[in-house]
Each structure stands twice: as structure tokens, then as C-alpha cells.
Length: 301
Ligand code: HH2
Image (cartoon, rainbow, N blue to C red; front, side, top):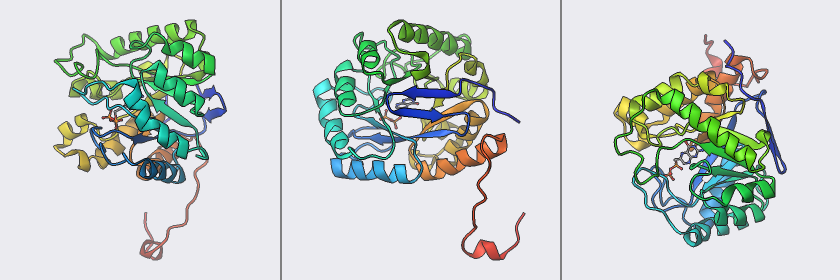
């Protein structure tokens, strides 16, 4: 089995990801009071920076910091408020060993984050909310994530309906890619994301994951973020704190379907899932690890 081929390279600012070699992980750092799974956990800048460094040590290839929740029904926050949450953390992450992306839709926030050394702008609105954002990204030579969402976080879960969800997400991403390139952002600095959980019913999320290879033909790497989301809770009947296995399954199938980057909260566990997938897909020579503890004394198969 080989994963369907999408574009393998991603390069921006000081950051290059060799995506043909292995799946890359974005570790989620939410510095918000109201994110759906970890709101309020990292409001203290010191704790947030510590968590980011822990995720880097656990194998995150990039830290994705966000100061505004995009959960269904969330109200927007001002650029000032968003920056007041993010800025102090970025200051502490001056010596972060991996690149940082900023999860924002606002040019003012992205600009300040890029000045502070961030490499990538993760825009869940795909350049729809702030007309100035494309110019800020292009000017800085930054990377850009274009994600599919229906409407806005406040309205997106009000009866989402599609004729063919995959065809519609694909057409949206193709059009936003053209917009970004026309604004001066080089294609090799762009990642595409189907936006799991953004204006989609459970079946839409499952269908997108099942038919992910159809999005790989857009010629840019695919980033997928199913981590802890409510479609997993709907399938398994589990609360947000009990979605690790569901996340692992979604991630494994996304990787098999061509995702070369995944956005995750549980970096250590999902890094193992990704490594195992990569080994099966023959992406990277498997690292033969040493089994520690009681298990090594018992032959296993
Ligand atoms: N999901 C969330 C936020 N940002 N960005 C991309 N590119 N893809 C995603 O799937 C994605 C995203 C939602 O997760 P989280 O940040 O944990 O929650 P909240 O928006 O409540 O802060």
C-alpha cells in the first residue's frame, strides 16, 4: 500500500518540511479560555511556553499557536485581545527548536506574529475574512494554510448541507489556492486542509476522510486535523477527554489517504501513530526501537 501522492515539498521562511519522507506533526497550543478541548489550560504564558517546548521534545515538527477559539458558535475576539494572548507566549518561545505557525484569520495578528519570528499562518478562513492577510503573508515570505470552512465559526454548524461534500471542498480549495497564488504567495509555501469539523455534519467528516485521496490531486500537501473532534464523540459516544483512540484511527486513515501533515493535541501518542503509518506505507526506513520493561522478556508476535 502506498499513500496517494500529493505534493511532497513545503518551504517558507526558514522552514522546510520533507513531506515525502514522513508525516509531519503540528502540535496544538491553544491560549484561549474557551477552546473546545483544552480551553483555559494554557492561559498562563509560562505554562503555554512550557507545553510548546514539551510538544517539540515529544516530536512536534511545528507548534500551532492560537488565541481565538474556532469552536462551533464561538464569538470573535478583537485583534488586540488575540495578540494579548499570543504575544507573551511567542516572546517566551524565542528559542523554540521547531517552527511556529499562528492560527489566525487577522492580518494585524499575523503581521505581529511574523515580526516575532513565526513561519506559517494557519488561516481557517482561507483568506476570506481579512482582505489584508494575503499581502502580509506574501510580504513576509511566510507559509500559509488554506482551510475549508462553511460560513463562520458562529454559524457553521447550523444545518450544514452539501450535494457532494468532497467535490465542493475540493472546488473551494482549488479556488482559494488560485487566490493565494495570485496575491503573490508561492505554491510551495501553501498547504491545503479540508477543515474537519468546520461546517460539516458527522457524515461529511467521515466522507472527507474516506475520500481524502481526491483532494491530493490539487498538487499541494494536505494537512488534516481530526484531533478530539466531535464527530469522533458522535461515532464512539465518548466525551472530549476520551477520544484518543478515535483520533488515532482518523489520523491513520488520513495518512493512508495522503495527508502528510496532521494537527494534533496529543503529540507523543499521535507521533507514534504517524510513525507506524509511515513504516507501513514505506515512507521512511522504520526505526527499530528497543522494547523496555517486562514486555522484552516475553516473545511476541
Ligand atoms: N481545527 C481547529 C483549529 N484550527 N486549523 C486547521 N488548519 N485545521 C483544523 O482542523 C483546525 C485548525 C479546532 O481545534 P482546536 O484549535 O483544538 O479548537 P478551538 O478552535 O476551539 O481552539
